[in-house]
Each structure stands twice: as structure tokens, then as C-alpha cells.
Amino acid sequence: RLRCMRTATQTPHIALVCPPQPIETAMDVDAELGRIDAGDVLEVDELVAISTTMGDLDRLKKWLFRMSSSEGSSSSSAALKPQLRAWSEQIQVPEPVVAILTDAFDEQRRLSSVKFPQLAELRNKEASLYRRIKSMVETLLATTLKGKMARRASHVVLMRRQRAHPSTPSAPS
Image 1: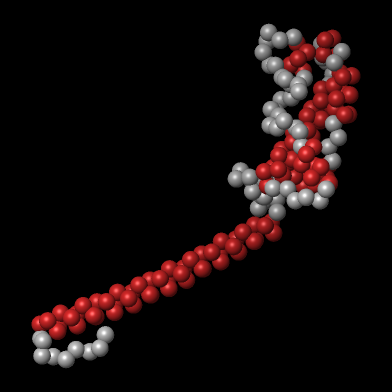
Image 2: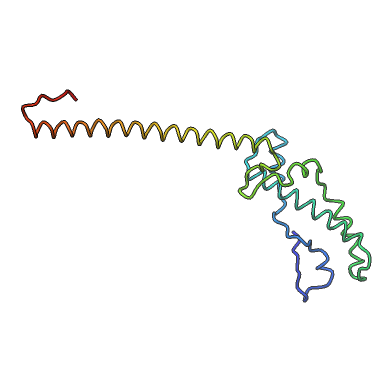
């Protein structure tokens, strides 16, 4: 693993090797990629890890290439340029995969409705159906409870009438 040191006490060429954006993952997704090759279906967390890793690798590759091609560097950093170029060339990132996975997940680690508009439509439809079903159930419960309460209230009223007027025949309950 490459550790980046950004302090002034470090040797000047170390700062050159540190990408401007932090790398978010350990970049070890061989197991997940092997499972994909075997035809397995990955869980969302595994897809997020692959997405993050591919994005990080793509940024790192481009950054290393830019650093190896930059002009006006000191002699100590100029000596590193061939190594930086070699590292950038060793990173193989499948561009179609990066294009699909870039911004594929939202903050909640779910597939992005922005990236996949069909998914947004399905989620909206699901939410609408949920609201309709919930409203129906609430209406049914309210109606059932009102009916039970009304029957119970009429039963109580009849019982009170019977107590108040014992000679009056009561209606069956």
C-alpha cells in the first residue's frame, strides 16, 4: 500500500505521489470481480465498493498521468516522472464499467434515481401504491372501529333504557 504524507517534514518527492483527492477504499475488489465472472449476483454494498474503487482507480490513473506529464517540476520530482507514468499505465480501468458506475449510487447507498430514471419511476409508483394501500387500510379500520363503537354505544343506550324503564321491551342486540 502507498501511504501519502503531506507534511513539510517529508521528502519533497513524497508530496508528488499523493493524489489531491483522498482514496476512499482499499482497492481490493478481486473477490467481488471473481464472483461476477462466476455469474454470482452481488449485494448493494459490494457494488458500492466496486463503484468507489473503480472511480478512485480512474482518478488515480489520470492524476498519475498528469503528474508524469507536467512541466516545470523540480529535479527531484522530474526523476519520479518515469515511475509515475509506469504506475499510471499499470492501472487498467474498464471505461464502460466506470461510466456505468460513476454516480450510480446515492447518499443512502441505493441505486441512484438520477442515473437510472426508470428506477425513479418505479420508486414513485411504489410510493404511490403504498400511500393508496395505507389509506384503504386506515379507512377500513376506521369504518370497522366506528361500526363496532356504534354497535357498542347503541347496546349501552339500550341497557340504560332497560334499567330506566324495566317494563319496556328491548330490541334484540
